[in-house]
Image 1 (cartoon, one colour):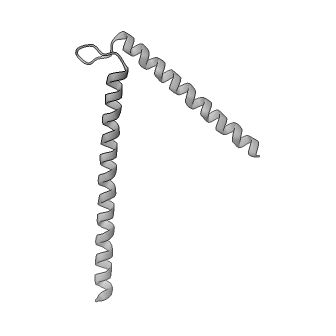
Image 2 (cartoon, one colour; image 1 turned 180 degrees about the vertical axis):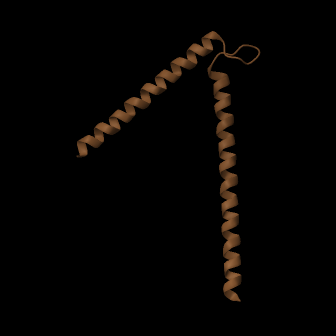
Image 3 (cartoon, helix red, strand yellow; image 1 turned 120 degrees about the vertical axis):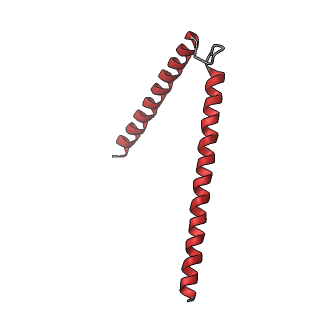
Length: 86
């Protein structure tokens, strides 16, 4: 009987831990989404209806290209570092 009670309490404990982790992840992803939307609205030019202006689109494309180049450079440095270890 004690073993069944132990399993029940153990199962409840892990259920609540699992639910807490899911809830925390949901809150974190919503916060990140809101932050990205806020940054997007403030960093790139928008017209009164909320659409990107031509200048805003140019800024977005330039930012994306810079980010892509930075990622490729970092990946190539990681690959070079790995090759040196061989």
